[in-house]
Amino acid sequence: MKHLLVAFSAMLMYSCTESLIVDESIIDFDRYHEVMPVILSQFTVDTVLYVSIGATQTAFSRLSESYFPTVSNPYIENIGAARQERMEYVSDSVYKAHIALEEGAVFKIGFSFPELSELESYAYDTIPFSSKIISIQYFPEAKEVDNRLLTLVRLEVEPSGAKPETQYEITVIAQGTDSTDILGLPLDSSFMLPSLCNLFSEDQTIIKDRSYPYVLQFNAPSPKKLFFSKKHDNTTFKVDFYYEPPNYTIARGPDGDSENYIIGHKAIIYFRTLSNSYYKHFADRQSQFYARQGDPLYGVGEPVKVFSNIKNGEGIFASYVTDSVSITHEQ
Image (cartoon, rainbow, N blue to C red; front, side, top):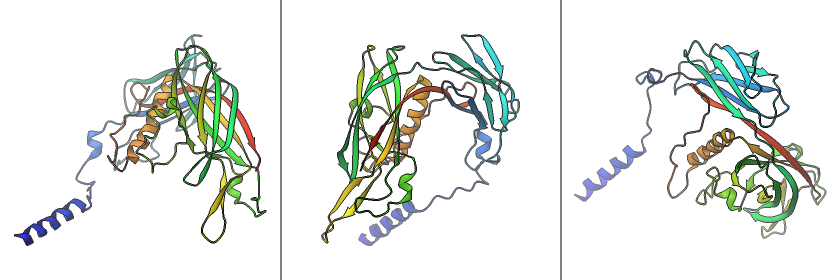
């Protein structure tokens, strides 16, 4: 009987670990999928507005990856000014508009895709009023995590006051200014290239946002964007976060000890005030990424449906405004 149990257990383990092979010739995914137009556009004030278009596809889709649905009557409208303009063709997948983009203005875009639907695909968004960075403090080598030195940044922000609750995004781009380390040895040239920094936070306003990795995800990649939503009474507020500056390690002695050093660099902190649609879409995308990462205790998280404001389609049409400040660190 014991031998039978061992044999059964081995068969069960094999059946659970055997790879699943899907025969795409048997399962016709396209049959159950309705192809939808995709519209993507992020825009801000005093720029040219670009829109990318495409179409949804299934797994093992028979559509070409370069398939772009035929477009008719592409337009953009400033709702408040009652002004509509035809969008300019750039390529099969890109259109642009030269309409004036101003804070507080409400815009609508519309596209018709006669190959896919009789319905027009359209979206609205309002460019938010900007919030301003009024002061900054930074503390190099404020924290060390996994042999990485982190710089603490504290921003004081004056909100726009246009809404009782506003959404924000923080990113940091750093570029090394030193070509040698403290021993005079040359540093890798990659340090001289501008790059998005890994970000961390202990600020409850940020870490409680659904887009921030939760505590059990200690092996997940650090975010390069921080999202948060803030209720305020039009008074200034402060927000704290860390960024990982360009740094290197030098071994000290035969016992394996080492020391970490921050490279001289310039960092630009971008503080974006977001439209509600922008925040929902991109916070959902980051939340979806971390759901796929999972954690050691519960495994992969539940699927996240990414927000879309495109009617009769998928994608996003969303705006933001940016304030920025730079800091310079010398080695």
